[in-house]
Image 1 (cartoon, one colour):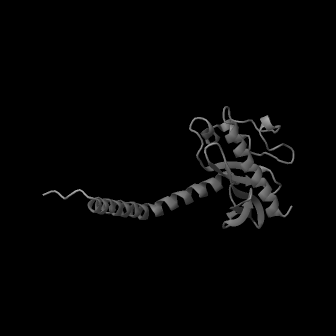
Image 2 (cartoon, rainbow, N blue to C red):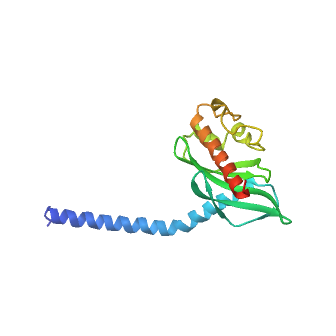
Image 3 (cartoon, rainbow, N blue to C red):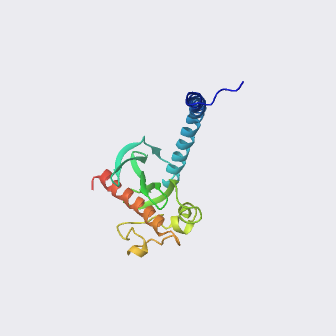
Length: 187
């Protein structure tokens, strides 16, 4: 004999389904939390290595404000001398947050940049991570002699074709990291 369809039976059935789904979702979170954290740590480590000169000893993460948001930076030293700084910088691009790691030498020049994460449009803004012409123009960029802004805004940075918003966000992230560096150095 089938159960009678009424409000109480429907509510009990819906509650049971929700409890089972919640338990499965919670179990998957517990199973995947550690591998996801490890993968993110590996990405961060690789990104720091990509923006700093080789060799040297890396400090632990230190807090800093970058673009009005709390962030972190790392110091690479060799023989007691600072070789470079790695500053994590986040801005908002076309598709959402764009997070970079920016390597800066002690004289204030950008050593290199690396994208940690982005949500930009595939094939357009996502080229900030794959278009070598775009991201390589930041290598050795000296903000004291060039304007850290896209050419459309009077600066010295070539934007990605059809992705001006992403290019502006990337450039702003680098600019914010340079400003944070000046705060770190006490300038």
